[in-house]
Figure 1 (spheres, one colour):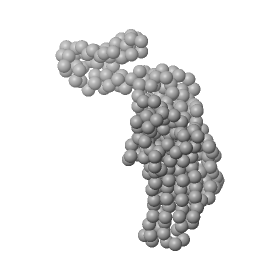
Figure 2 (cartoon, helix red, strand yellow; figure 1 turned 90 degrees about the vertical axis):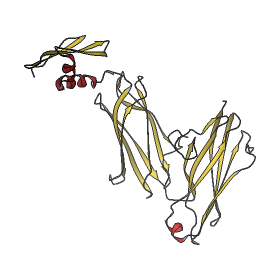
Figure 3 (cartoon, one colour; figure 1 turned 90 degrees about the horizontal axis):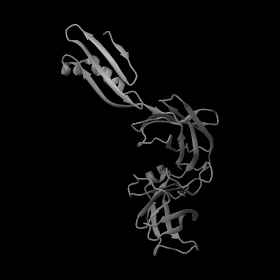
Figure 4 (cartoon, rainbow, N blue to C red; figure 1 turned 30 degrees about the horizontal axis):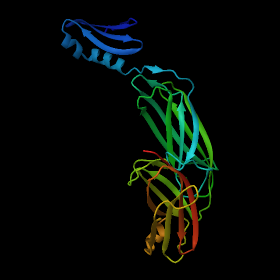
Length: 315
């Protein structure tokens, strides 16, 4: 009612009320930072509690003070096995093989409080242009980031139908209203006996993603899937063997890590698209190694091998 807003370093709000007189709300702003709010009037407690005063104060508290860092764009885009890698050799994937995209989003505005406000959408279209996958997300916490770059990552699993697809990721900075995007062509290959879905973690449950490696004394946990195995005898029987090799190709672990997935349950054999395996790797000595994983489809007598560089740093 009869509001007046004026001033530069300090901003005054005057509210006239017939029953209570006049009260003032003042914001002290120095170098674009809000330091304190003072409300004065005939009855200060009543003035502070007045709905119009509270609304005014709250509205200023919500005004973002931002740092302009330029054009919004994706940089350093990588397709990975898991959020932290390793990096994929190509964008050809097999069924049931999740693919992660990671990038730096530069030019995003941040407040002095270290917050951001951006939203993103990820869409996958088939060769006919039909959307077969869609995912959305939003971020507000930049962890105090003021550098203008935000680490972005998103994961998806493509349909198991072989064919070509197009991935599009859009990002909108809601503070600056800038929009940016990138696209990537993806190909789903026909199923074959193979290892897919390799991911590394720092915990057994798979809640803390890890890069392919760690520090001396840590345990590295791996999760993976076997697909395309023989099930013609109404049975599944797949074995996994994992070993760390040094630069000369010699085994590092005193005993290879082994596991087996087997069942003759007719319903499981019919419905299971893959067999999952876990492996725990003790990182005991600094250096560069190779993790070799071999899968054996015992019924079809097929083998497949997968190797990943592993770096172990000093503690």
